[in-house]
Length: 121
Image (cartoon, rainbow, N blue to C red; front, top):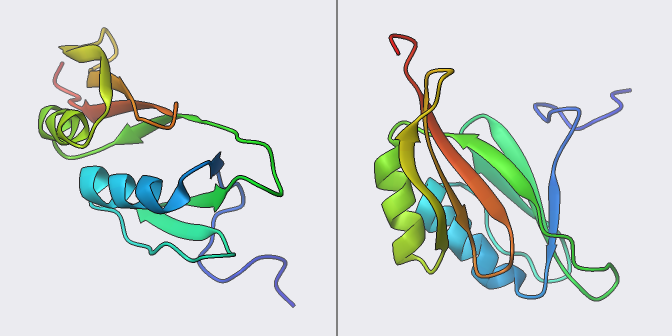
């Protein structure tokens, strides 16, 4: 008997939001994520090879997240996040460790660091 669903990671971040349906749409639009809003159940959002659960507040206290997400194009993803209503906290820039990284806060107070790694840097 498996202790977790097949294909699931051992640790899954979960965001509890006052508006989970709109947060799910934001994550789908910005990160090209898979997954659907499910009333009464957590949304299981797939961003690349990762899983993030999104729940509505009510039974649980709101809990925003701070997530570091690798994407193919940090600049394009940053611009999609801004267009989808996020606030810029850091414009895309090269870090000393080879990531081109930006940071935004979505309308539900979650902070997203958006990065593309370039090992040549």
